[in-house]
Image 1 (tube, helix red, strand yellow):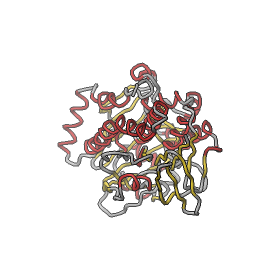
Image 2: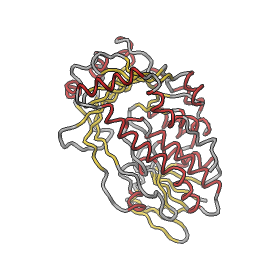
Image 3: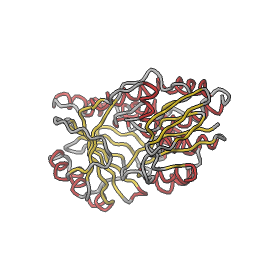
Image 4: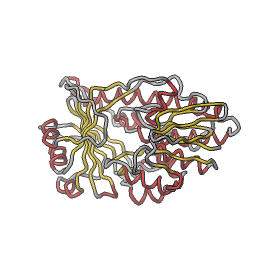
Length: 391
C-alpha cells in the first residue's frame, strides 16, 4: 500500500515513520523548500513519549530532551506556588514514561533521521486532491502529481486536505496572541530559574517557560488576550521585544528578565476550530492540527498528533485489505478524545486568564487547598496509552 502524507511537521513525520515500521510504502510531501522546524520549545507528555519510544527514539530523546522536576503553577506577580505536578522520576512511576521539554527542531530532526530523507519530498505545495476507485492523486502547485492508495492530511490548521474532506471553512481567531522567544540558559541561571516547567497565571495573560535543547536555552511563551485585530498565524512573524515587555510589565522578575534577555521575539495569533463530525472522506483522512487544532493551554498539540500517528498506522496495519474501513476505525478511536482535549484547552485558558481580582484570589485559594487538583487536570490525558491499547 502506498500512503501519501501531506505535511512534514512533527505529526507528518511521525505517521510516516510508524507506517514504514508497519511495512507500508509511506512518503511525505512538504511545501517548504527546506525541511525544518521553528526555533521554539515543545512539551511532550508521557502519553506521546510512549509512542516515540515505540518508534525507536528513546535514545535521541534522552540526548536532547530536558527532564524537568515538576510543572509549577505560579502567581503572576509574586511568583508564589499555586500548584505542582511532580515530573522527572515521578512521571515515569505514575504514567509509565518521562515528560520531556524539547526544542521543536531537535524533535523534528530525530524523527527525520529515523525516517530518512529519501522518504521526503520538499517544495511540494499541494493544491488539489482527486479521488477515484483506484486511489487518490495530489496535484502540486508546480504541476507535479503524486498518486497512492491513501492520503493523510497532516498539513496544519489551514489544511488544504481538510477542505477536501469537510468542505471549506474558516479557522476561528480566538482573539489571543502568543509571544515567544528563546533566551540563553545563562539568563535563566542568573535569575535562579529552576529546572521546572513554570506557568505564571495573571490577569488576561499566561506566561510559560522551561529549559530546552539539553538545557542550553530557556523557551518562553506569553499568551495574551488581544484587543486589536492582528491575526497573522505564522511562527516566523517578528515581534517587538519592547512590546512584549510592556505587555508583561509588573510581572514577576523572572518573567521580565527572560523577555529582556531574548534577542529576537516572535508572535502569532491563536486560532481554533470546533470538532469535525468525521476526519475521513473515501481514502483520505486527517491528522493533528488539520483534524483538531488546539489552543495551547493543555500543551497537547504535538502530543495528540503523535498519538494520531500511531493509531492511524496501527489501524491500517490491522486492516490492510480495506484502508477506508481502517481509517474510519482510526477516527472512531480518536474523535472523542481529541474533542475532549480541545474543550479542556479552551476551559483551562479561561481559568488561567481571569480578569476580576476576586475571581483570581478565589481560584488561587482553591488550587492551594487541593494539591491533587493540578495532577488531576492532566492525569486523564497523560495516562492514556495508545501503544498498549487494542482497537
